[in-house]
Image (tube, rainbow, N blue to C red; front, side, top):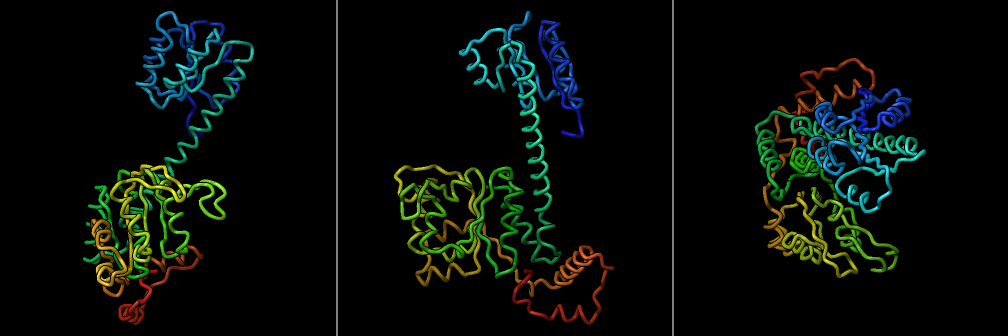
Length: 366
């Protein structure tokens, strides 16, 4: 917002009053102001995409409600502040329901109230722009090629599966040893999917005590147990319309697996200590370093849940099986380290490369 003028259209058939508003708002040099005395002239200039339109409710050529409707249809991002010469609560409520940002009655305090209202609109617009920029940066950060560095065939296969996952809403199960980048893959899928602007919620199942995991996932009502002093939304509700990533799903207690299965089947949760059913629409990505098929044979993981969660499986190869990717990663980390510390660039000797390629990397990329 700071790099471009904040455009305000003043639409009022009273020439003197529109000049009063223009003078008052022009005290802020960041505002670019234009006056119109007829609705048709204002509507004809909407291609300039004003941030705000102050709308006189009583115009000679169009009803204020009709103008508001056209403004919302043609420039939905433009905020409309209705200014009326009469205090009619029913009209005000109706216009606010139809999308007006505010309704001001004409009196000696209107210019000051309008000034405050536009300040709020500008602050909100600035926040929205920042959020949009952050989302773009996040999307760039989680570009597949930046998340997983490498050119091996194994990694290209992973990219292909990630691309398929990002284009659908299918459940994804990510398998791989500790340190292979399972959570990075989950984030990359989310931020490259149609849900990129919705919440992404990560839960490390292994890190939550057994007695708290149900409340953590599904929330609880006030008084549900000792210490539950208020209602708390669970992670599934937090992730509604977005993605929930359940890391180390193989550690989930067998007693809770049935409840998770019900959430997947019915797309609804019930908070601990409550009876109300809460619908949730969540894309699920799970990860584990365990062989869940073996856990099913052992009886520690439900077979029906296993098949529900399997979805599109993505197997992340251990670093020791990625060949020359080891050297690509080494160069990446060396370049990053020298840049951060103001050092000259370093190169790996042939002997160092040989040692790296023969090392088993038990911690993988991490």
